[in-house]
Amino acid sequence: MEQIKVVIAGPRGRMGREAVKLAEETPHFTLAGALDRRNGGSKLSEIGEGFSSEARIYEDIKECLFETNPDVLIDLTTPETGMYHAKTALEAGVRPVVGTTGFSEEDLKELRELAESRGLGAIIAPNFAVGAVLMMKFSQLAAKFFPDVEIIEQHHDRKLDAPSGTGLKTAEMISEIREEKQQGHPDEKETLEGARGASYNGIRIHSVRLPGLVAHQEVLFGGEGQTLKIRHDSYDRKSFMSGVRLSAEQVMKIETLVYGLENIIE
Ligand SMILES: NC(=O)C1=CN([C@@H]2O[C@H](COP(=O)(O)OP(=O)(O)OC[C@H]3O[C@@H](n4cnc5c(N)ncnc54)[C@H](OP(=O)(O)O)[C@@H]3O)[C@@H](O)[C@H]2O)C=CC1
Ligand SMILES: O=C(O)C1=N[C@H](C(=O)O)C[C@H](O)C1
Image (cartoon, rainbow, N blue to C red; front, side):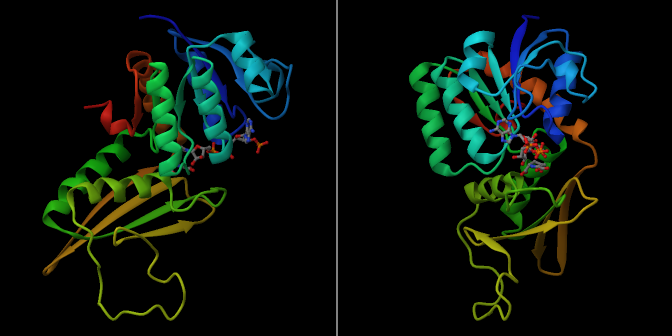
């Protein structure tokens, strides 16, 4: 298999740490550098995270991309930083694989235009876990038969964005096959603001944040005299790593932006 040179942004983060280990352990990946907002100039092996890589840490993306000349930038940071990194990478001819969530529709449009104008691949995956991708696809299928649906996503309490990228993507995928629909009683009133959750085309999304959780989602369908529940649980961030690896491989073969892993695992 062809060697892929990667840079990882956010190496001290919960996801970034796993991604660095993945890159260290994958024979056809070369870890060329890391982007952080601390430890600039140090090697990854020197920062006390248990990394063995001698790759250098950079605090400036332009310097990092210029000096390391990678094929792929894997971003696992925050929405604002992720958008800046993805744009800067494309402008420098580097293909971004973005796991960071919280991007707007306008962000996706801007990145798609940039990727296509440069003839470069880009992948934005709200969830890299294959089980979560199947949960979203099964939910899309179920919504044909059960148009009344609510999404309950549950995450650790260090998460910045709500609803989760997965919750939103699930609602978007269901909306592709379901007409906008007001659910619940037409005269229902919230006596406490937020009680009915957020609404995406009438699909309610409820976000739970608690210590002890990792990443979990249940899609709940209701029909006459029956309910259907489709649930996925990530108990460990290792669950996301096969999707990160696949994305870094696939992004080398495309010349547009792909939003969602379901579009590359089919
Ligand atoms: N697609 C998927 O399958 C998954 C996506 N995610 C998403 O990935 C993102 C990261 O999640 P998680 O690892 O839990 O978050 P963490 O907060 O643990 O990690 C984010 C890291 O990014 C660093 N960072 C912030 N700003 C910058 C910057 N300007 N330059 C470089 N590094 C920066 C942070 O540094 P500092 O410590 O100094 O703040 C931190 O180390 C989130 O958007 C989350 O929703 C998470 C899990 C799975
Ligand atoms: O922040 C997280 O942890 C996760 N974020 C992603 C999301 O917003 O859907 C993916 C996964 O749920 C974990």
